Image 1: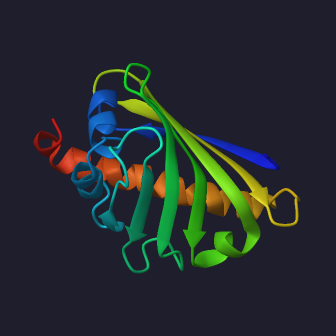
Image 2: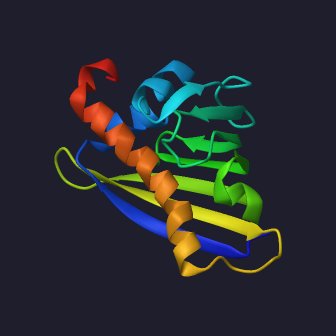
Image 3: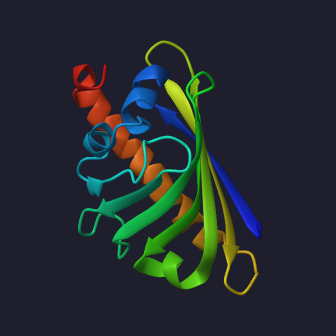
Length: 163
């Protein structure tokens, strides 16, 4: 399935537990609050656990021309703070015209007091089977990094809302 894989470690100025509880909660309203400013709506078609379908509607212009991300939650391991999605489909933007499929995995690792690292891995397959150019790989992972950094900002501004 995988034509290419991109990995990025994102340093975060919030505790691992706070990032996990906010951005990767099984509650759609909590996730929407964590990504507020980039995401207008999040829904879980299911119980928020593995197998749930997760449509995420982006705020206008927040992700360039992309308007919607649809995915299927594959796994959420609260103990290891690892979450993964597959069957990801982006509507609008360059990714929609180039990619057949993509899967994303995020592992949240503590990195000292009040900090953590979000290890983001994106696997993808292009429509033509080729590997994305380095520039297009950077654009693809930038969207996911942008979401995690938005959650960091929202969590830091109101940590009590996610405890």
